[in-house]
Image 1 (cartoon, rainbow, N blue to C red):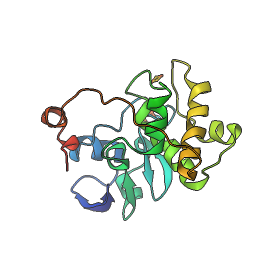
Image 2: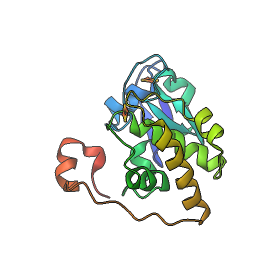
Image 3: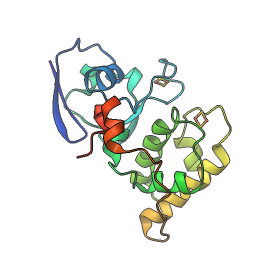
Length: 178
Ligand code: FES
Ligand code: FES
């Protein structure tokens, strides 16, 4: 049994401690916002926050995560109002839903440490792969999120996607409104 805290809830996983955290989150906890891309630690689609650090969940075993505080994209903000989410939506950064959760988690962890990162600091922290070339506006948008976190800018929430949360929760229970 492995005990950890996931999105502020105590969880006990009755899985082999060698199981990648990614599978525990996705298959046991139904937190499918954390994506499986490469499985080799290269793409960052599986990035979660562990004790304040952005970590590749596919390269982290349950045993390594024992006792830690894990935050996934579902736990970052229930209503998409984290400054990184507001900025990325306002700047039309996302091209897909696959790489973006990991990018958001990596950016949020960066801004928690440093809310005024240089372009170089953002580029160094965001090692996630995106095949569609969003990087220039992604870096600007993450810096904008930092300004919002510092109170230097207000970002208006973008339009809702028009999906009823209750309908979404039928397919993905992790999205159940709380
Ligand atoms: Fe983990 Fe690609 S799935 S880094
Ligand atoms: Fe997801 Fe480029 S926005 S791969």
